[in-house]
Length: 320
Length: 168
Image (cartoon, one colour):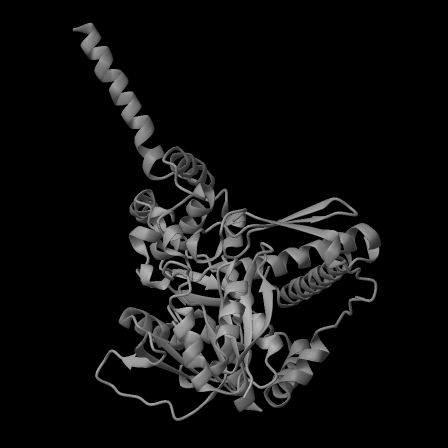
C-alpha cells in the first residue's frame, strides 16, 4: 500500500516536473545537441549539419549562419512540433534538401522537389568557368536542366543572355520554370520537355513540337556521368529519393555524353563552346572519343579542376 | 505652409510631431520638412555626418598560402555524393589562422565569406587600431554618443519648457 502511494507520488512529481520542460523550454542548442546525437547513433551522414539546416528552416531564418545568434533562444511550441516529423524524415534517409524543400546554389535560392536532382556544390564552379572562358555569350542551351540551377545562375550573371533549357522529366521542367520565376529570369528562359536520342537529336516527349532554327554560342550540361558500377554504391539518400536517370551514365559513364556531343556539333555556331561537368576520369576518354570522330568538327580545349582538386569540367570547341 | 505642416504630421513619426509643440523647433522642422519633400537626398546629407573608412592598409593574402578543407572529403565527389554539410575550413599557413565558415548552404558562398573573414582577421592582427573593424567601431561609438547627446539636449529643452509652462 505504502509502496503504491510512494510510487504514484514519485510518478506525479516526475510528471509535473517534466511536462513543462518537454513542451516549453527547448532551447535551440539543446535540440541541436540531442538530435545530432540521435542521428549519429542511427548512422545518418552529416548529423549536425542536417539538424542545423532543419532547425534554421523551421525558425524561418534567411541564412544558416543566423542560427549561431539564436542558439540560446527557446523554441516555440509550434516550432518544436513542426521539427519532429522533419527529423523523422531525415531518419528515413531523406536528403535535407528535400525535407526543407529549398537549397542554395551560389547566391540563388532554389526550390527543391523530389525526385528532381539536387544541385551539387561542385557544379557551382561551372558558372564561373563558363563566364570566364566564353568570348561570345548571347545564347545558351542547357541539356538536362533538373532544378534549373545552371541556367538560372548564368542568366543572373549576364543580363543580356537568352537560354533554352531541356529536360526529359516533366517534373524537372516544371521546377525549372518555378525557380526561374522565383529568381526573376523566366522571361529569358525557355524550358522544353524533350529527350535526347541515341542518334544525337531531341525527341519532344509532350505534344508540343519544336525545331531548332537557331544556333547557340554555348552549350552547357551536367549530364548523367556516374558509371553503372558506381551507381550501385551510392548512399540511400540518392537511390531512394533522387531520379537515377540524372546520374547513371551507362557502363563507362559516357552513354549520354556521346549523343550530347553529337547534338552539340549540329547546334553550335562556329567557335561555339561546350562546357560539361564529368566524372574525374572522363577527360581523357572524351578527348580520345573526339579524336576518333573527326566528322563532328570538335576540338578538346581543356580540363578544369573542382574545389577538391579533381578533374571535373571539360571545355570543347566547335572548329567549323 | 499649413498644408506642408499637415502632411508632415501624418507622414512622420510621432516623436518628431510632438516636437512641433516647441516654438523654437517649429521653424527648423518646417524648413526641414519642405526640404525633405523636394530634396530628400540633400537633407539626408545635412542631417547625417558621413565618416570615411581608410581601406588603404587592408592586407591581402596569396591563394598559395592557404589550405582549404571541405567536409566532402575524399571519394568520387560530384553527382554520386549528396551531402548537406557545406562547411569550409581555411588555414592560413604563414600565420596559422583557422577560419571556419558555415554561414550559407552553398560551398561557393562559404568559400567567399571565409576569405573575407580571413582578410578581416589579418587586418585586425596587422593594423590593430587602424584596421577597418576598429575604425568602424569608433565611428559607431561616435554616432551613438552624438545621438545620446542630442537626446539629452532635447530632454533638457522639454524639461525647461515644462517648467516654463508650469506643467510639473
